[in-house]
Length: 259
Ligand code: ADP
Image (cartoon, rainbow, N blue to C red; front, side, top):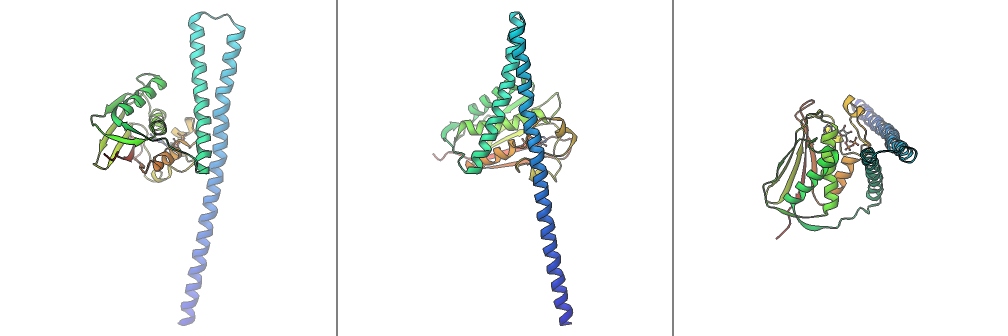
């Protein structure tokens, strides 16, 4: 019996060891695959606006354009430059996060007007009205935040609500409080997220492998950076979704300012 017991323990130990190695290899392979996809996405994200800028520059220098057409070309060039600036900014922020040098410049901010400005600004950048914004901000609360860094978080959530929800969109932004934390939520009526994917969205480079995501440009860095920024504010960020096809809600909690 004793020998049988020892053999069983050994078999169990070997099995546990094998399953550990299997999981480690699997997660390393998955990370490699994600990194490869990431490099392909970044290359695409860099090349597209650069190619487009070249075309517009040639157009500007080689053709006589009327004032209306010229203004339109300038607007398109601005859009390309914005895309490039955002991507490079995100890449730099990831490098800073890795080096532990993503620093905050906190200020005491009244959240409702700040959030309204960020949401309206993003709606304007994405095409006025295209988010179908519904703002529910009727609460007078303050927090010590880096307004630019936190704006990046909200902008990223709104940009995702735009990317992963078809038209006509309805994007609801709410501000609330539980007495200790400010609660900001961004909900869309888009494709939603399956329960299996929810915990993985905040990992670096992670993109859901569905058709919808594949059709949309992205690097899988936005939510990772949002998580880093919210964590630096001693807050939390969570995703929820009733299921596929039923929209998604992202909820950010950050400490209220102490009086
Ligand atoms: P990116 O949008 O560049 O791919 P993010 O880190 O912002 O990267 O998002 C990670 C992934 O989470 C996305 O690729 C997408 O699959 C999923 N996702 C994010 N926001 C939403 C949303 N509002 N609805 C459905 N899926 C989403």
